Image (cartoon, rainbow, N blue to C red):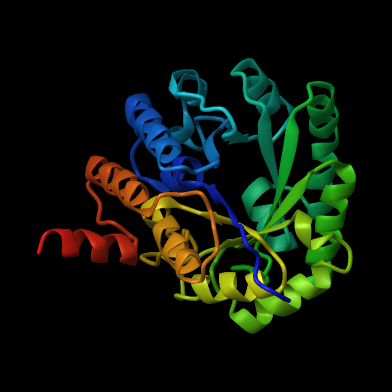
Length: 302
């Protein structure tokens, strides 16, 4: 299958990245990160989540973040919602697109959201109905599509079934997440080929963690399978809680560098993206997780 001419990058750093930090981040710093990403040309930014601050304190005050950012025309500013209460809070904050999440393995579903896969999908029914009434777009996530920390291997047929159900419920797109980063390119190709038998490739996205250094090769494999939407996190924000000390989200800068080198358009400015990532890293007092960013910044200092 030919490579796409354009790829949409879904920036998850402000949500999936920052929620893994050990300490809460100020609203001011969260707003500045989103604005920096907007100025870099990112067209889809996962800005926050409406979950209990008891469980995810880093995402407290997401409503204030949505109120504080500079909403640029044509940019999607989205939020993760776990249930109807979260959706209602998102609606109150003026959010026009949300995401829901399910797991591909029973073990992860029980450990992460305390219910079975079937029960989790049933919980989405009122969320989807309410979102439709409010004309809010819904994106679906599936975790652990290439492996689970509790159940080990995950059958591609199971992922395909869940993806098809999410689409049938009203999700416009489903992001396939290698949550623990164990997948390799051949497994990614087989997975997408199987899922695509039930869900059009144009409604699939990839979310690959870099725990074992395989994210870019998995993205390339997905590109060859006709996927043209990928989640990534600026400066590689976010770790892998199931592999202490390991990296989690693939760095947006690294994905962008690869795509640019392949002649694939994203609309994102690499230099501005690097600057956005380094600024939030300075705030957090942590090293930049992007190899490309480190190389470019080191070159500038020569």
